[in-house]
Image (cartoon, rainbow, N blue to C red; front, top):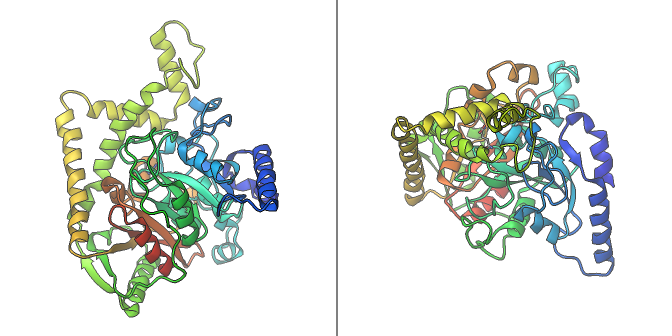
Amino acid sequence: RKCLDQIRTTQHLNAYISVTEETALRQAAEAETRMRQGVPRGPLDGIPFAVKDNFCTEGIQTTCASRMLKDYTPPYSATVVQKLFDQGAVLMGKTNMDEFAMGSGSTDGAYGPVRNPWSYATFYREANGAEPDSDWVVTGGSSGGSAAAVASLTSFLALGSDTGGSTRNPGALCGVVALKPTYGLLSRHGLIPLMNSMDVPGILTRTVHDAAIVLGALQGLDRKDSTTIPPLSTQMELPEKSDVRNICVGIPKEYHAPGLQEDTLAEWRRVADMFDREGARVVQVSLPHTQYSIVCYHILCCVEVASNMARFDGLEYGHRSPVATSTEAMYASTRHEGFNDVVRGRILSGNYFLLKQNFEHYFTKAQKVRRMIADDFKRVFDSGVDVLLTPSTLADAARYCDFSQEDNRTRSAQEDVFTQPANMAGLPAVSVPTALSKRGLPIGLQLIGPAQQDKMLLTVAQWVE
Ligand code: GLN
C-alpha cells in the first residue's frame, strides 16, 4: 500500500504506463498469508516489483510504449516475470520506455517522456535555479520508467531490457544499481524483441546485494529460449563484505571518449585510485575495436529490427488501420499509424542493409567487426584482468529541453559508447551509482566482467558501492 501511495505521489514522473493495483493487492495479501503461516517462498516473497512494458504479462496490457500494441493483452507471461510471480513478488505495474526499446532517453514513447526523480531534489533545484515544471532532466533509457520506479521508491526492483545499454544507462542517470547479466543467463522468452542476438533482461535495484538475489532467482535454462545457459550457481547471494585486494582492474584507454564530462572523468579516476589503495592491481588496457561498436550496432540492430517488426502487420494482433482498399494498403497504413518515426526509420535502414547488393558490405562486415570487438575483451580477460572499470555514461542526465532538441537518433547513438560493447560480446556488466555531479545529479560507474562471471562482478561492484 505504501508503494501504491508513492506511485500516486510521484505520478508526475510518468514512470508507469499501467499500475496493476488489483494484482498488487491480491498478491500482497497472498504473501501476507504465507508469512503469517510461516511458509514464505524466499527472499522475494511479498516484494513489490515493476516491469518494463516490453515484457509480456498474462492478462495485463503490454504496449512497448507504441500505438501498435496499445490494446494488446498477452495470453502468457515472460519467463522472468513468471519466475518473480512464482517467488511471491508483487507486481506494481508496467513501466514507461522508448517505443520498442529504441532510444536512450525514455522520451520517445507513445505515452510521453519519463521525468527523472532527481529533477525534484532540492539540491538539484537550488544548485541550478531550476523550475520544477520546465527544467526537469531525462531518466536515460530506454528502461527509464523502470529506473525511475526504483529511484522514486515505488518498487524495490524492476526489470528492464538491455540491448545496447538500456538498463545501465537509465540506472546510472537515476542513481540506482543496474545489471545486464551474461547473454543467455536470463530467458528472453516473452520479452518482445528488439535485437534477439543482444537482448538481455536487465535488473534494477537499490543495492548490489539486491541485484544478486534477483539474478539468483531469475537465472537458468528455459526450454522456451534456446539461447539460455544453465544457472551459474545455486548460491548467488553475496558475501557480507567484498575483498578486492587481489583482483586486477583494467582501465580501457579507448573509453576516454570525446564528450566525457569532467565530473564523470574525475569520479572514474577517484574509484580507480580507491582500488589501487585497497591493494588491487589497476592496469591500463586497450580495446582497439571499441570505436566501431556504435556503427556496427546500428547496422546489426536495424537488420534485426527489420525482420522482427514484420510480425506487426495488422492481422494477428495490435493496431489495424481502417484503410481497407487492398491488403497492401492496410499493411502500409497500419505500420505508418502504429510505429513512430524512430521505428520506421530503423525498419527502412535494416531493409536497405539487407538488400542483395548491400548485404556483404554492411551486414557481413558488421558481423565480422562484432567478433573483433568480442575478441578484444577476450584477450584482455585472458591476460589476467578480472574486471574492467569504465564510466556508464558520458555525462549526468540532460535537461529534457536540451535532450529533445538534438536529433534523437544521433544523440542515442553517442549515449551508448560505454555500454554497447558489452552487448556485442555478451558480457555481464553492472552500473553502480557512486557520486553526485556538480549539478547534483547521479553519476554511475560501470564494471564489465568475463562471460558467466556475474557473481564475481557483483562482488566487486558491492565493494565499489
Ligand atoms: N540506445 C540503443 C538503441 O536505441 C539501445 C537500446 C537498448 O538497449 N534497448 O537501440
